[in-house]
Image 1 (cartoon, rainbow, N blue to C red):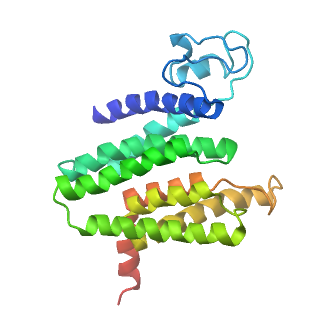
Image 2 (spheres, rainbow, N blue to C red; image 1 turned 60 degrees about the horizontal axis):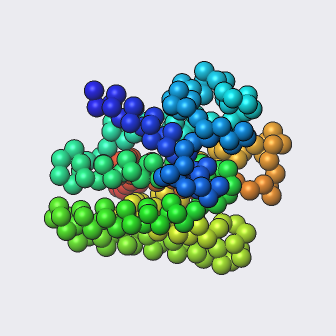
Image 3 (cartoon, rainbow, N blue to C red; image 1 turned 90 degrees about the horizontal axis):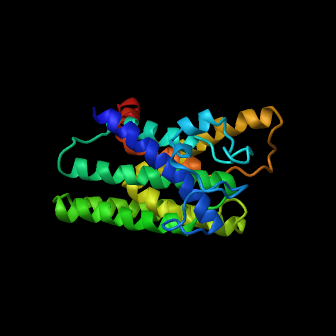
Length: 262
């Protein structure tokens, strides 16, 4: 039952991500304006906004002008999938601080999906998404420490992870003059390093992101669809690395430690 609720909730929020990303880029009023076709600007009816089903039924085209809609159901599918994976593999009991961080994590997932989609389309990590995620990170860390009696190591480890990851990215940003990574990655690294919760988990985020980037880039290079100068958005890779570390990071680190410890 919980998984079904998460799927339905994730589908709705995935649709919200598509609308949020488009309206942020177009600088539209998200609260007062209704969804419309980006081509003919016809206001969409509720039947046009059913997550995934409407897109499939209309074959990805506007019902009114029949031009192809730039949005895809990717976010609408990705969010519920990550919701379910998070529930199944959540590393803490669903009581107290474990439930608290899980609920906040679902909000993070929605923000991450919006960032990944925006970065994939326009190679930008907008402050209007990153800054609220910073505030949410502070709420999670301080809430776990103050309200749920977690050890003082929690905020300290979060600060170490944030400063380490962001510091590495800031160094790369300075050395490359902003050509290798953008400043948005530096700011996002504060959030992701804090969520990783320590130096080693933060480094693991970078390792996973790099491996995923290699897996994605290598086929593109071999098939000629990309060159060494092609720009690959790093934000989605970092977010994928963070997902892996939050859900499985402790198990990965423990397995590594057992493997190389006499």
